[in-house]
Image (cartoon, helix red, strand yellow):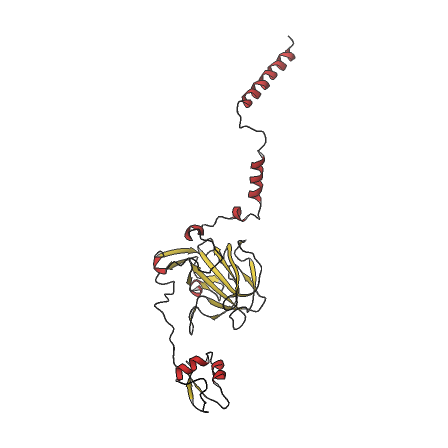
Amino acid sequence: MPVFLKHYLTLSILFLSTLGCLSQQPNFSLFPKKDSVNVYREMLNDNSDDLMENHPAEDIYNNIWTSDHVNPYKIPIDSLPDSTRIDMSNFFVPVHGTITSVFGPRRFRFHYGVDLRLKIGDSVRSAFSGKIRIIDYEARGYGHYIVIRHNNGLETVYGHLSAVLVTQNQNVKAGQLIAYGGNTGHSTGPHLHFEMRYIGNALNPANIIDFASGNPREKSYLITKKGSFYYQHEVKPAIFARYYKVRKHDTLARIAARNGTNVRSLCKLNGIKPKTHLKTGVRLRVR
């Protein structure tokens, strides 16, 4: 038998043996199944929120994800861990503005954030990477506002916006443009109301961020139950008596409007009736 024919037969036998081995493996395929290809394409799709990012904060928040309230968790401060460290390394200041109103008690309510000066239309950016939980409007409160849950466990609130540039459940990056500043809702002038919360409980942003430089005070912030939160039942704003001297042609309604109160309160404070004649020069208690 010619040599070339021997080589041909040998190669043929080897090829048929290989095909026989492959046929005994039912799951083998030279090409991926259609489902596998689709899954791979989905993993590469940047528009897929579920595949883009797995939020470690889900465990902290017990998988509660709702747009109903800024604080739907209702976890009392006493039930929180004694201390928790929060990564601040990726912080980006929402606006470069000075603080015009601090965190803490106001006349008859509590201010749960800080107000940062801006002009209507100024850029507002996300403080950290995260996911948009709330986009809403409150006429007597935040105005147009956004709440973002971040991977480090914090949630931030941005209020009194003129325009919102993101959508609910959207993933955002630290420093990403999310809105334009404004004067919507219960606001006395253009500013950004900015809050930092941990499981719904408000922290003082000025303790965490140096807004003059726009940088965090530390790369990681230690949250403590005793030092980081405001205990509403322990701290009450002081209320001091305030008086107004009646002028010519003054009425109770006009006096109430000038002093941020109402006729009913004035009557109660001064033991008078709505139709009581006011004498010029008399002092009325307005607070």
